Each structure stands twice: as structure tokens, then as C-alpha cells.
Length: 522
Image (cartoon, rainbow, N blue to C red):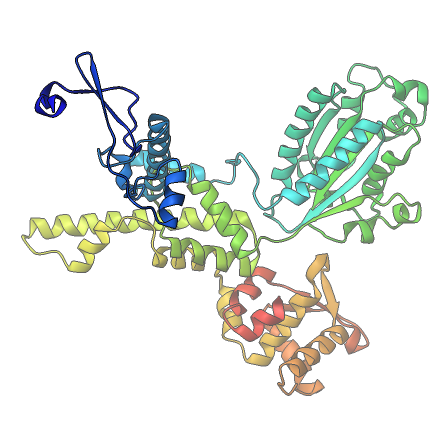
């Protein structure tokens, strides 16, 4: 058996298949020797195994063990490609896992740069890159502007909602979207005039600004007012056809509400002229302004479209706060502290500006606390005395905690009126709760008849026996003397006007801790 005795000189031909049990080719220099092993009887399962490409038994390993090549692993037709691909997949999954496990370090409130960066991120003037939780409202405003520009048609839109709900911020994003869309479409961008009505010395000055934007260089007839110039301009096709469309964004529109309501009415009427090139968007806090102050427009079928911004919920406030803080490379707040802020602000007003203000106040409270504890530690070191454990723990934990947020909330919302309301008897609190429900939506006052009816309904819904009419009248007098309500004069006591003298938010903050009143005020 020369092939066996000279095994150290044997070479296995390339292309030899070890899975072939019938022929083995071995070379010794130039000689070739063929051997055929004895045949064995095959079972039915062995026949199936023989017909398969790899009939030799294979000890398969798990993918994790097969990452490192081993002589015992079965050969692959394209082993390199498979192993490289699987290794990349495995490493990418590990990378994603490690990325999710990366935890931001706590911030250093003694670092002035950290303080400055955090307060800027939480400031009202810092506009986020994207406006969260207002996608639907923003889309409605953009589609309105888009339709007016495409059709070269005038129109009016009224944007209303509670303060701090993102109305003005949405308009800035809509202007950016409109500019980008006009460039892509190849259309002409309208002249954009943004006016804050509180900056006007006189309500009629808004027409001067509009006229200056429409015809900045043209000399005007001195006998005509700016409003008359605009009305004449939008009534003649020859003059208006050569003008660009003009988008007017009038913020704080309710400032234009005067006794005769003439300015507000004339402003919206400009969009109804046959050749008007004016797109008007009015922004205000009063929800029913169009119904109460523009009845003539409604009669002429020229009532503006309305987009309403609802108050932010707890989840939305928390989401927006996290969006502003995620850009920071460190952790500033305990998660429970942010949740408390979102829950309290949503229960009182849903004003996002209030939430940002509370967070900044909580940071300032932490600064004061750390300065005080540093002085105490220095004093203990000078006296060679051991610092209290609570002081050391407070010095180590340098993020805004739950107690900081609670104090900041009480300072922001609490007022002497809140303490007075919380100390009132239950039935007087129910009266205040009834007044708040009646004056919502822009109403300034109500009547004793309406208030009495609302009071009785709340009592019956909660199975509380209402007091008699005489005792109820005495309660109105007590609340009037305490400065919480103001009662008007009338011959008929039931028709006397009732005005809420304290902030609606103070009443809601004072009573929102009691489930009964929280349900009534929702």
C-alpha cells in the first residue's frame, strides 16, 4: 500500500468531495490510486439522505457559535459572503442596542454654560424645529393659503384658541411652508404682512399698514382714507389685476374690537370685494368672536373659516418638554418632575408658555438650594464638623427634583385668591365653579338666574342638597365682599349681572385637587 505507507507525501486533489462515499482519489506524485469502500445496505432513510446534496451527517451549530469558523463546520458554497453578511448584521444589532443603552450624564448646575444652554432651550422665544401636536391645525391653515394662491382668490380665516396653544408659532411655520411650496410650484409668492394689533396706536392704523404694503410708492389722494383707498382698489379690475396677492396675518385680533366694531368688520369685508387680492388670517383668543362680532358677514355668507386650537393635554405638554430637552447632552429634570409639571399645567390652563416658565423657575430654585448648601458645607469644613447626611445627599443629586417642581408650581399659580378659594365652604366653592363654567368661551359675565340654575344642576348631579334661595343670595353677597365676584344692580334680583373678579385659572388651580370639582370643570 504505497499510498498509505507514504502518507506524509500524499496530496489530496483539489475538487475531491469528502461527502462522496463511493470514490476517493489520492495522488502520490504522478500515480493515481482508486479505492472503493465496501458497500452497506441502505435503509429507506439512508436512500433519501444519499439523494440529498449533503448526505453526510452534519452537526449544525447555532448562528452564534458559527460566527467563528471551525474545521467541524460544514463547508458553504459561499461561506465568505454569508459569514461577512451575518457578522455585519450581528454587529449592527449590537450597535443599535448599545446606542439605546447610552445614558446621558447629569448636568452641572454650577456651570454657567449648562445653565445658559438649558434656560435657552426652555425659553418661549426659542422656536422648535418642528411643532408637535399641532400638525392637523397647521395643515388646515397651509391648505387654505395654498388654495387662495393657486386660484388667486381672496379669503378669510379665523384662528382661535386659548393662550399658549401654539397659534402664532404655527403661523411662522406656515409662512415657511408657503414660501417653499411657491418656489417648487413656480408661482408668485404673495406679499406677507404680519401685524400685532397690540402695537397699533389706533385700531384704524391697520389700514395704513395694508395700504403701504399694497402700493408702497404710489401717491394717494389726500381726500380718501386708507380704508377707502383699499376699497376702491379692490373694486376695480384694472388696478387690482397688476397687484400681487397679499397675505395679512393679524395677531391679537380681539384688540380691534371697539364699541361699534367697525374696524373689525371693515377688515373682513375687504376680502369680499369682487377683485380683492387680500388673504386675511386673524388670530385671537376668543373662540366665538366671529359669531358675536361679525353677524353681518354671516348674513352675507362671508363668514370666515375657523380653525380652533384646543388647550394642550398632559401627554402633549410632556411630549413638547421632552422635545426641547432632548437636544441637551445632559439630564436636567427627574422624569417624575416633568410629569408633575405637565399634569398641573394641563389641569389649570393647558398653556405651554406656563409650563416652560415653571421649568425655568424650578431650575432657579435648584441654583439657590445648591448655593445655600455649598455655604453650609464650607462652614462645616471651617468648624471641622461633619456635614449632615441630608446635605451631602442634596449636594450629590444636582438635577431638578420633584420637590423643586412642586414649589415652582405653587409660586407660579398660587395667589392670595387661591388660598381664599380653598378655605371657602363647599357650597360657595360650587358657586365659583358654576361661574367659571358659565363665563367660558369669551363671556364676561352671567346673571343670578343662570348661576342659580347651574348651581342646582351641579348639586343634583353629585347628590348634594342645594341651599335655599335666601341662603344662596347671602352667599353671593359674601363672595362679593371677599372680592371674588362682583354683583351688578337691577330691579329684579334674578337679572343682576355676576362678574368673576379673579382669574379663571386661580379658581381651577384652587379646586383641581378635589375630584368632584375637577370633574365639574372639565
